[in-house]
Length: 505
Image 1 (cartoon, helix red, strand yellow):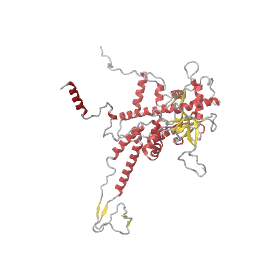
Image 2 (cartoon, rainbow, N blue to C red; image 1 turned 180 degrees about the vertical axis):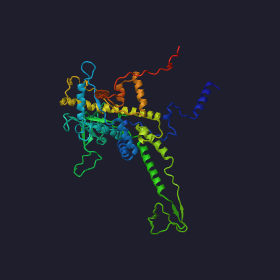
Image 3 (cartoon, rainbow, N blue to C red; image 1 turned 45 degrees about the horizontal axis):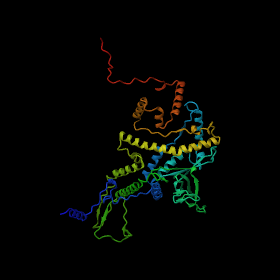
Image 4 (cartoon, helix red, strand yellow; image 1 turned 120 degrees about the vertical axis):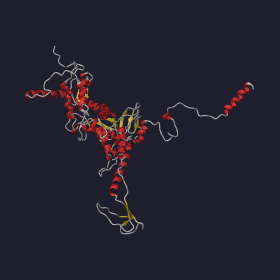
């Protein structure tokens, strides 16, 4: 056989061989098989997903908060841990020379803020003080996914400062308005007008809440009419989870389905338990169902009374069903569902369920530490997006209106904008161990008293000043306490030291 014949025979043999699909290198999670055929995915953008789910998720989350004990408790936990009784600030204006704080200026700023933060001054409707606005904001963001705060530059009540806040529910931001803004080339996405850099330029609000009741006095339907408000006046608060996201999604997004099923399961178990406790038994008769006065719509009317025995007709027998409700799987199932819900919301299982039966000191402390990291993140987010922006606007208008007399503010406004927001603190499971750990960390130089006090929600200046007043009052009244006078610290115990007296020589 020649060389050409051998090559031709080899080519013919390979040409008739069955073809095999080439193998590709890929992640196992991306492989399509019979086990992943029902795994539907898409490459839509953040706004495409938000637009399709915004209204439904928001309304379902609100329904759960209205009717679900666990959803309401989760929302209450978020508001109380992030805001608590409110987040005050401590002015940090320093003197022009040196590094010391300008205490008179700081006191003046804090006093003016305390006066303005009352409900009749800081809220356009005069109903909410600044702490109430903080709580309403964080509750609305968690429940609805977003909230808008408008800074109205005019005085309300007896305030001299021309500024007040209007809290606007997300429903009024018209998510159906998409396209090109009138008389502009800006793009409008779900009611938010954006420039070429996707920076908000304006917001398009409905003049009336789409779900509001139409009162008889209203003769014109203004629900579909819009008003354009400049972005300089609006604080659009929501957590950005993907680049390019324009609107916020409810924090209950991944938990609404589980909470809905849990509510249905709990209701079915309650009805089953009621039925099992009320149902005494069934009466069977060989003659079958009879038609008589005690039969209505094909159903025999039977009344049960506790402690009463009834006689049966000849041939009738009684069978008592065995309905064990709720059974032993009820509690484990509810706990498992609530653990999934708590993971989705970032709230500990113990906080949602108030079930501490399966926790100890170590597990409780670990859960609290992880949860409090989330609260601190939300506190800083709230400060950057609400507190600091409102404060800087308030400070400028307070100076311009003459309510605050700050020298050379126009020349160096940043000097007066330095504040430290005092977040709320938390008590520990075992305060004795935590205080001992704080003490050792401070003595080792790992932290300071100011940081420890701030972590627990206090103000070191207020505590020290109050402590000084207590000591002075105790000396004036001739009272002595364990900490009245400075006493030397006891010498630390030393290991491997013989403390026995020397032997007599």
